[in-house]
Structure formats: C-alpha cells, structure tokens
Image 1: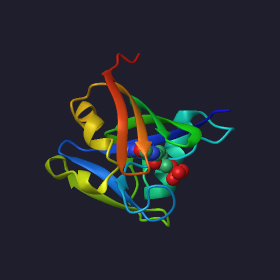
Image 2 (image 1 turned 30 degrees about the vertical axis):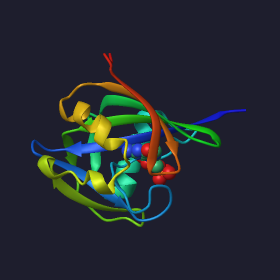
Image 3 (image 1 turned 180 degrees about the horizontal axis):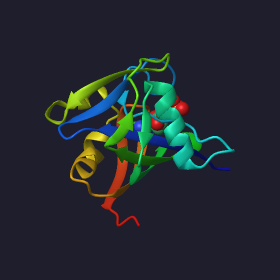
Length: 156
Ligand code: 6OG
C-alpha cells in the first residue's frame, strides 16, 4: 500500500532576495528551505501554507501564488510526498525565529544550494524565472537523487 503526504512549501520573495529558513529539527534538519509543512485535515493547502509561514518565521503571507508541484519518493519508503510550492512578494509583520526555523534573507546570486535539499538546485531556476513547474524526484537516502523528471507547467 502506498500513501501520500500533502505538504506546502512557501518562498517569500523580494526583488533580489529570497527568505529561507534553517531547519532546526525534524525532517530536513540542518538544511535551508522555504517555510511549510503538513497540511492538516481541516484546512486547504493554501490555508496550511499561510499558517506554516506564520508559525515558522512570524510573517503574514498574502497573495500566495502557486508556482510548482513536487513529488518525492524515497527508496524503501511507501509514503510519497506531494509538495505544493508557493511564492509571494506580499507580506507583513516582523521576521521571528521559531523553534523550527531560523529565517534569513539571501541574495538571489548567493543561494546556499550546498546546504539545501539537492533537488532545489534543479527546480529553483524555474521559480527564479517565474516559470511554473512540476517535478518528480526519487531519493536514495536524503542526499542522492537516483531519478528525476522536471517539466514546465501552465498552471491556471
Ligand atoms: P515538516 O516535515 O517540517 O515539513 N520538503 C522538501 N523541500 C525540498 N526543497 N526538498 C525536499 O526533498 C523536501 N521534502 C520535504 C516540505 C517539511 C517541509 O520540507 C519540505 C515542507 O515544507 C525531499 O512538516
């Protein structure tokens, strides 16, 4: 039996910068990533995305735009992750470190790919070009991608 886990992943953007968080615990610990997590049964993906941003970095995210859909599988693990990726340039509030994440702005020219999930380096260019995308990644462990597909998508 295979199962799917529904997750959100949000990137807060400025013209030349992107807000990433250093994951302090749990899945992806020690990696920089966007903000997000498991969508709860009583909420939509979008509501979950907004909630996670607030919880993890203190900001109120508005006008989230769906930019990508990622599916991850890990060899030997029957649970696939379905990650809905959003971005926004509109937000308010003050950035605050949480138990889970340490937020920091990065210049788009200095994205710390070597300390991020290896898939990010493959699909970030789509997001940074504002091109919606859909990707599939099969991992061996948490550092090696053994198979992947990535395509441009026309999201409506
Ligand atoms: P919690 O388990 O903390 O949510 N996520 C990934 N993000 C990237 N860039 N690559 C991956 O490759 C990922 N797998 C999961 C989804 C985990 C957060 O991490 C994202 C969520 O935003 C395997 O609730």
